[in-house]
Amino acid sequence: MRRFAETCEAVAATTKKNEKVRLVSAYLGSLPLTDAARAAVFFTGGAFPRCEEKVLAVGGSLIWQAVRRLAELDSDTMAEVYRKHGDLGAMAEEVLQNRTAPGGLSLGEVAAAFEELANCRGSAQKLVLVEELLRRTEPVVAKYIIKIATGELRIGLKENLVEEAIAQAFNRPLEQVRRASMLTGDIGTTVRLAAANELAAAPLRLFHPIGFMLASPAETPAEVLENFPAGVLVEDKYDGIRAQAHKSGQKVMLFSRTLDEIVEFPELFAPLAALPGEFILDGEILAWRDGRPLPFTELQKRLGRKQPDLWLSHEIPVSFVVFDLPYQDKEPLLDAPLAERRQRLGLLLDGPRATQLKLAPMGFCASTEELQRAFDAALARGHEGVVAKARESLYTPGRRGRFWFKLKQPLGTLDVVVTAVEYGHGKRRGLLSDYTFAVRDKDGLVTIGKAYSGLTDVEIRQFTDYFLNHTIEDQGFRRRVEPTVVLEVAFNNIQRSSRHESGYALRFPRIVRLRPDKSVEEIDTLERVRELYEKQAPERADGA
Ligand code: AMP
Image (cartoon, rainbow, N blue to C red; front, side, top):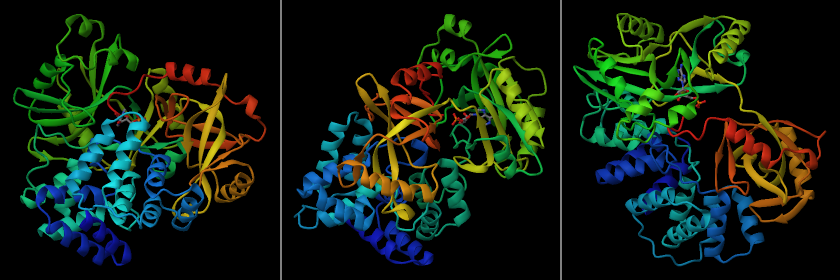
């Protein structure tokens, strides 16, 4: 791990892309394969490969506490160092400088510690693990462990440069490396494939799931059409389980978004096996009865059952609504435009087929009015919204690009009050830009989320001054502030969480506007959060 950290230091020290690539490539090339695979993942600034969707859930304040305990420093000194760097990792490196640490932590040990952290619930336990991990290592390594844990290395190394480094280290064509990384959603696996010279052949094999193409969120029809002035293809947005069906001969397998096998819906196998040829289909499994989708809660009852339950499958019948065809009859169609893939898909599903297999209807919208109408019609049919797709979009596995946009009704908004603020990073370093906010409960305020986006730079600057003057407690990295600033936040859904005092967390919260017209007594309550939580489809098992 020390050499990993030193390589990162060298990469950060140069602005030249070629030099960065050379450094990473030389380092990767010098490692045993298992370590090279781990290091490649870490170089992308993550503890785990993209396809795993595992999270460490180690927040800034937890790291702050762990470092503080190790450095045995008071908050003020830590805060001063933090402000100088605007980066927790760099702060840790400086404040831990005088400790004599054993060093010698290997990449494998760090990877194992990340696994353990991801599997462990509860911040007290996580704190102990983080402290132990950092205790075992020298300052520069601690710095990079923290950077990976917080999700960003900030050494000017993006995934595409890591891909270039892999191509260079193993002397393989860059295009092949990029494609493999895209298909597997795992830069570590890509390293292994590159080393074995299997980049070209390996990824698109039937019965080996590929990453799903994802859609970016859009707020309004107008925002969607800005990206597609000439109009856009539109499908319903289905609220089920995204699934990929692989079929050859009589063999059929279904895979989930996390690329795990789905075994709960055996009634889909025969209809898929009856279709001609070999293929990979992409679509959504929905509970479906009498021509309409059933709520996600119904579908959920069938999840996690390894043994078929005849009564349940009769009670909650499912359909597979298909919207894409990334592979057919030995031909990868990833580079074919969507319009062509859809045409082939139409032909494939054209003949007689079981009712459980449905072709997702597709329309075309050229104006915001048309798109709004399509959206309303989708809701009326019992779906979540629409997905707008560029006619020419290629199938890019595992990527959330600007070719597919999802438009769905926000679950709602909440009026909340800011209770703590933190310093931002990069452009926002030195500014109090990250807001922890709370709702009302009978005994006071309980935190429910943290938002970074939605305010203008000018507003953030003004609020920085305001919060500096309305601090209740300066915790260095963070300030508890007087609960006076009321915000309206939107979010995608609500999850149960032990991270916040309310026991809930908002997913993808963003600030919609300031509510200077509201006082803290008028903000939303925990009761309303519970209601919204009950109203939505329960927590998604497929991570969608
Ligand atoms: P969300 O759950 O809001 O993040 O939406 C993303 C999910 O929408 C994807 O992972 C898919 O499972 C799902 N989805 C539903 N309908 C479609 C569609 N027509 N095209 C692509 N993805 C879809």
